[in-house]
Image (cartoon, rainbow over all chains, first blue to last red; front, side, top):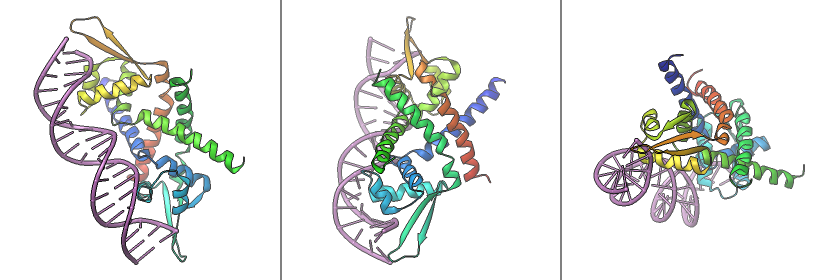
Length: 116
Length: 116
DNA sequence: CGGGATCCTTACTGATACTG
DNA sequence: CAGTATCAGTAAGGATCCCG
């Protein structure tokens, strides 16, 4: 591979990584995905209760972003009063590997920094 | 597993994920790691040139954080004027899997959102 | 060359109150 | 219940200049 080829490939890889990071960024995204994933389907107020410290404003915002990225599906149920259900899309479920990797590495990292 | 057990395990996992994200967050961290990793050893001004758009202030800051997290090693060479070399630590190299996963997922994600 | 210090702008978050 | 609106504080990031 020539230098230029490398740099083109490299730039594409970096962009791909950034794409992933952008999606997962934000203080609560992974916690939200994690919560929905575990319970399979989860309502707004349930998630609000699952995650310690999150405000409804932030939850609302992060859910919107996740929906925009097609990681979760939002369903309004015809109840009184209205309830809204969130679930992972197929695409959202493909995050599982990454989440597992991040978990494993995080544990190793903590040992490396604090433990020893 | 009881509900409480789940919640304890779950909290630990979430903390682990957050640890990982904290380390990798920041606009340039992965680009920096990527640059050092490819060239094996790399000087401050080289990295500055590798990464389009980064300022010396940010590079300096991010390098410090990466060093604190023991992902890179900083070596001052006794030249005139001073040169400083950065390289990945063994721990830093263990990020490879995550970076690969993030790359793969990022590509898939881009297709999912834009492509189709 | 490899940064540090300063100033400034914007993005992210939180708290609280309010609405259909 | 599931959000929006508003206000306000903090932190992230950029631009520029300075120093050993």
